[in-house]
Length: 330
Image (cartoon, rainbow, N blue to C red; front, top):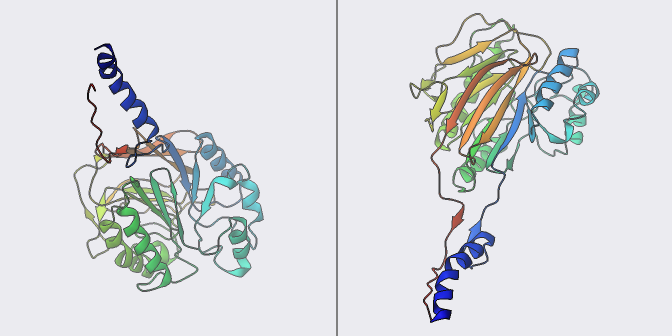
């Protein structure tokens, strides 16, 4: 009788301990980092403003730095690499139009960051990040890059361990009117048209959460948007800042690394917030047991100028239970 009562008493404790270490066959546990952050900006240059952007990002303690192209603006990568010394090991680069040629230090960027291709992806904890190339190689439908991005996003969207999907690139798919002299900085430019017609539906269909862009030298952040077939995307929800798992994606132009500004000459209907006179960076935070993504744009002066968030339903993905275990008092 005593042994029976002891077994009944100890059984719940034993089960808890065994589940905690996951030693039953068919039980897998996830010990992913539940709170982490990424810094993100593009269009850096090698000025004192660039140094302040580095300090801004470094101060947030990011696990990764998402660099969105246009770095040294010179024939070598050296001056920019010197600026980001403290962040270099954490930095993942996208190629921009100021380093896509051999006389702009292209091979130095590739070798420094150990890249064999200019488009790639990586996963950190529950976040999957796809890096696209809008300048060096083809991104048209059927290209090697297109096939990679499409297949990679499909795989990530079906992976139960991936909670968040972020895509970043140099040239923008959407923008407000601005004073950049290049047609590639406009919403009606050929690059923007081709990028959104080729990829935005793929983003919509594969649960991408955030799309980050550079090239235009200011900061803009949209409402959650989906592809409409035109230069004006569809705003998917009345929620514009703190949203519960909205359809579509938040797009952000973060071309404020330090080179100069393109003044805004209007505000697109799908843009929620924009500014063109403060260098800075976006800090993307994933917390609340990985169920919330928050984007905060900080100027290099330390002021938070914009914030948006996505909250997703809590999932019971900590353990997947295999064969059941039944205990009796015998």
